[in-house]
Amino acid sequence: MGRRQGIMSDEFKYELAKDLGFYDTVKNDGWGAIRSRDAGNMVKRAIERAEQHLASQNKS
Picture 1 (cartoon, rainbow, N blue to C red):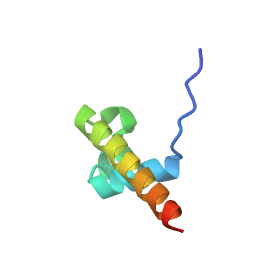
Picture 2: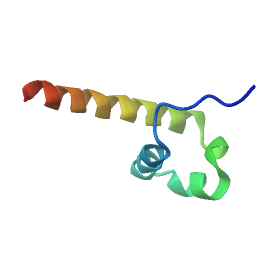
Picture 3: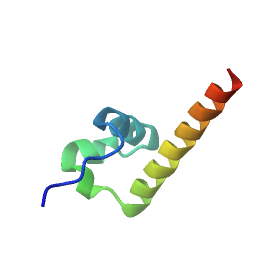
Picture 4: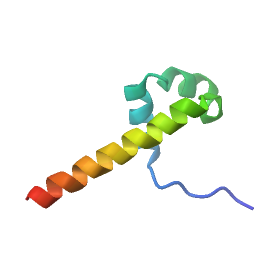
């Protein structure tokens, strides 16, 4: 069975990793090397950004 296609683009995931301070780990060792906490924080940050984006669209 193949890997599932993610919802987030790779570019967005790398941007979040840079913002959260673990980009070097991803760059050097891959996504499997990040801590569960970092992965959770990445998801939280993505949700926050999506909510902010939706809120700004609703104000328009």
